[in-house]
Length: 424
View 1 (cartoon, rainbow, N blue to C red):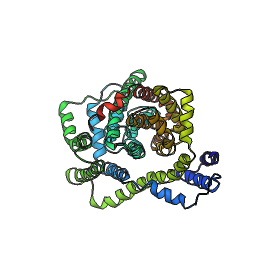
View 2: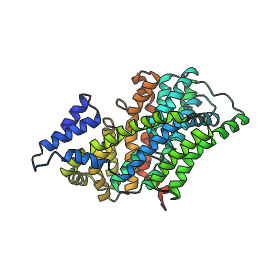
View 3: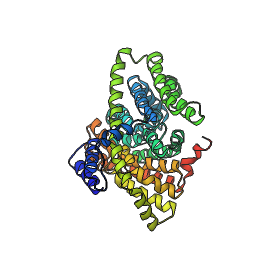
View 4: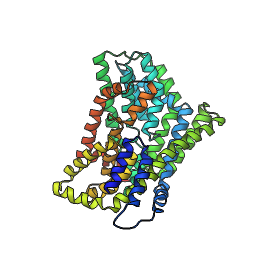
């Protein structure tokens, strides 16, 4: 087992892609497994089984819905809507970025997709208005963090499958924490805007607000349909993702008429590439996580934690400290698939609600996306805006502090995650 982790970490340090590093490390772990013989056919077999879950269809469909939105003008209308309604004070464009990300989060479920879509639209605009470009990137990265927390959420689909719990409950568990994050980020933008005397937004009359809102109403209805479908049980999880795709197509092609039929092949190809990356990570992590489970790490971890404490709150905090360290190295999905088989039994053994546990894990690992020095969202916005990476890292610190505060609140007060799941 030490060979498995050592080879994995060495490959990461050498710059190997995470998916390939897990496959090679799993191959070495199987090849040199000493306690019993394992046929190497286990490697491709477990990789196939790792993506053989019907629930994962949602991942591809939500990514496709997000691609259609970006190409069909829906994203631009959401940004315009946030622009006319969100604060007019100094630093208001930072608040617009966060607000637009919240509305995008109700559709795509992908932090990277949200950061890319909002970043391409907002960073040039904020630069032209005199905002420091590093701050602009940090505000957009922080807002994009909310994407996989507010439903729908790709990481929560994966967790629900691994924990054998309800996808609908997982989706609803992230709504209040996501809104808490958004409120805090907007407050930070307002405070920084006043302190640094950023330019204020122009005054917008009510006629303009109503016109922009009327133009955006079809775009705004999609997250409402998704939330109502989940909360009221009107559709299954997979049906909701299918409805999101069909609705985005109809609105983009028929209502807004900003998407042409000839553009669909490119959209499908782009969504296919994005889906392939995620599904390959899930497939690559399957043999790796099987070896972790085979080594009985979960039993050893339960025994070790029982020695330290049997208080569920203390244990949950210890697990979160561990996951925050993991998030410095690994992206959320590989981290979940590698370590959850060992951590889930610990939570269950201490009576921690699996939905609460999952919400905490997802928030924790999403924080890793904005944690220097390896935060993926920081690299995304730095690349989009051609911003020095370390400058973005400095500007992200206030947003990172609030993210950790929300994580602690959800740990201490489980009702923040569980209140909206009652009755589902």
